[in-house]
Image 1 (cartoon, rainbow, N blue to C red):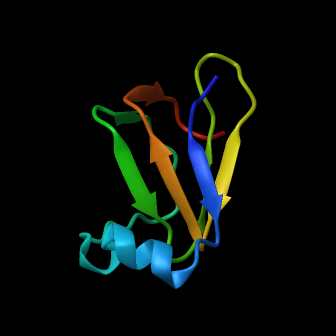
Image 2: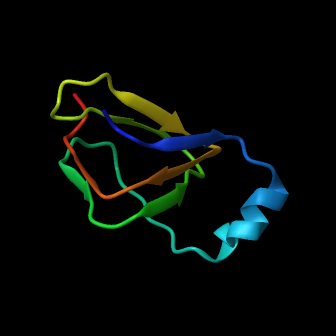
Length: 80
């Protein structure tokens, strides 16, 4: 089971408290790739969408534009 915490459409105050506007930006073309969270990860999705399919066979996790997510270190397999 993936233990992602996803906040859908957090308000501007929440994003400001976290300093999201000062975070580095990462972008990726449409692709399938293995992904690991080596440390606690926090991300805000500005545009697009993502599906993470774990190797464990658990249901895929979907998130996208406007979502704020938190994850502990975990190995995640590529989406299908």
